[in-house]
Length: 272
Image (tube, rainbow, N blue to C red):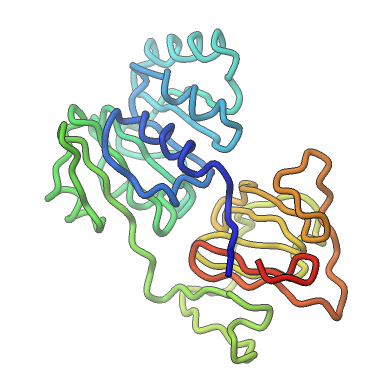
């Protein structure tokens, strides 16, 4: 049985690796999304990452002069927009809501608490810290991170765990049993709109797992920030076709099933 997820993952992983210069990451994690780099002294790797078109990168620094230099360098490189640089007004607070950022790459931590980095990361999002960032394993563990590892040059990698009270929705009716009742206890009364993207018909055939939403037949978005990850027309078979238009699913057609980092679907009568 074959399965598919996003293409060129290993290439994108290599670019994410450049953000800190070391630290071996899991290739499957570099699927696209929102990356925040703390420290604007070097933006070359951030520019390369944004240049793939798979990531939105924001570079933050409390030093206004460094931010201006970073903006000039990114503009000269022709990538400003997908990657941007902003002055960090409060050196102890990140300007994002909770569970929004896919990766935080720390070049200079300054006075930023690691608990704040933990707060803004999506579940299973990761933080990477350069050897000169002033971060150690004990600090990461105290902030709540798991899967902490160190590279040969001293760089660190850690991941935010998935909350025990947060469920997934892997089948059209929650699970394989067909009982459309979620086990999620993190949900509550709506208080705000988290993100808005594209047309409402995208919600057709929604399944979700590992922090990714899959719609119709088929388009993938990040569950927490709504950024578009990839698409594939199940009727045609292309991945990331420039002329893609989300197809509707007929009532008698099998729905895709999400499982871990994979999505299983029927393409031209075959399970892929």
